Length: 468
Image (tube, rainbow, N blue to C red):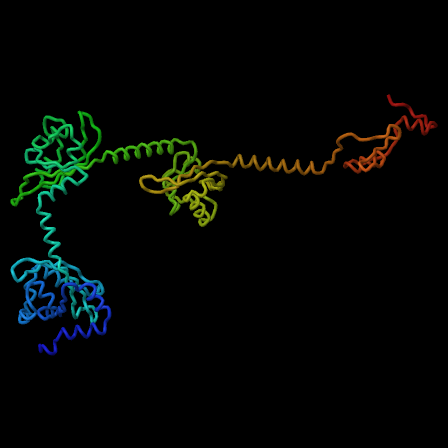
């Protein structure tokens, strides 16, 4: 193709002039060179003079080797780069980042961080690739030096908080890290001794030794073992045995990675005890108890008292939803469950439907509980139908008595009464006939008549006989 037509440098200049995002990309990431090329013709491309200087060349020296510039890049790295930039049609705005191993003019190796951005002009297929480079050689050389340094490896070995023990084929301890020395300080020095003698105070290998199994299988083996000190178990260790294979595939040694899981085991034991206690309280409780999923309303579990109260076998009851028992609407039920879940409220008055269709008034005490990592509502149900009936009857009786009392007027205190005419003086100082005063201060009514004594006095001619 004519170089004057296929002038990628000029094309890039034109793109930068029309696309501000390309300029920002170059400005931020092109600290050590730019590479612009056509993936359909990878031998064609333009590289900046600064890129060539990183490799020890000048742009003039390499001008006649443009079609072979990729020979300076590690073959594996070039293959990965070429595949990734072709796949960038799915995410054209996300640059592919990779460290390239390149060969310098003097034969040394340099490391370049490459960021490749796909430029698309016809759908998903990238038409051009724009790359920027940063020289990482100083950092990479430092990393390699540290990795080869015995002091560096030893620092890593001893900085690991879990225990590490390296054993040979005869289960002799070859090396341990600082954590193992702290755990078995009473057995120091550890190197050169049998692992079972140091770690388990035994005269022969353990029957289920994970290290021995790893040597035999050539695979990772693991086991939980006791942490023994002065002949007593003081904790539990989780041990992973990794076989170290030589070039022939034979096991030469085993690396034991040991983690102290004493606290975890104690927590698991305590959790198990609490769950057993809860299960005992749940199953043997005389009150009806339900475990309910607050999200779905499903009855997860029910104790025998609940099965008896509701009149369902456990297999049936635990296949139901609380909305099938509560007489509220499902929306109202879930609203109340949210209050219980958030601990805004833990006491509820409901009406529940039994298996025979009877409606019973119940008090429900409900709150959140976590069992096996699952959040549920534990509801204790008390049948209060009889009590509620008695309370309603009592309230009705009280209401009737209050109504009766409100209709009764009583006279209390001392009444000033005339000793002669028997008139009564009211609180305003007026004297009233006795019947008038009583009528005004009570509900009593009077009917008039004559007693025998007054009748004889007023009507002597009637000859009224005295009463016996």
